[in-house]
Image (cartoon, rainbow over all chains, first blue to last red; front, side, top):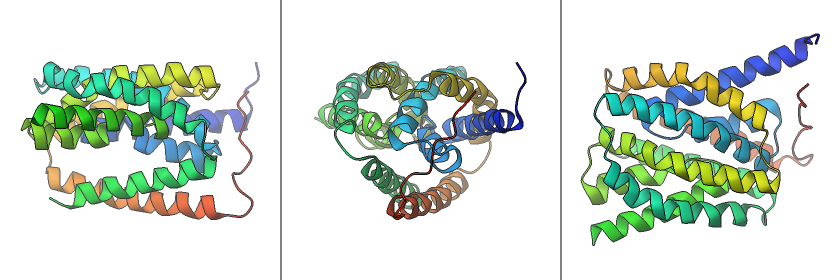
Length: 125
Length: 131
């Protein structure tokens, strides 16, 4: 199959998004979604719902790699991960169902609010 | 008591994650620092372990809703280990405060772009279809 320049540049953009998401995941312990979702929307013209679904696909892989590396540094606490993670699985069911019922623009604006909250959380010591 | 508070924040983190396509670390990390007395680095590492099953469940649900571009997600995920390696090594070497401030600044710039885009009258631009 002949690769068009458009397809190549698109794959390069996906690769760049992956690398950027991975860096922030490893640096700050977030899954990388806070980087991946806006880049898919702004850079690749994704709709907000597809951006979030595709981001989650990537996060499974990214978080699995990052937690393995953090495990080598001895930083992981499995009982506490279960304490927040098990209720969070129930929360993920609710969140994904809710997302199907709200407009895409609202999802993008809510995402912007999330980024502002993250920024405040990081700035305030 | 603090366990209950951490579990509630876990649920909220999963909900925000499912709604916005993030793992939920934004709430898991403070829950672990504030209620479970974890250090920042331990909380971040522990949060990553919680994120794996949460994201897997969200993907499963979103596949059902038709919102996952599997190929694109796998390319992003597969390329990220390079970034993760850089990130984890850097996080253990440089000032946490510098990291926090750099990411905060980036987050605010991106938030502004998303809001400007959402308010644009012509809405979302056409999707760049893959081959």
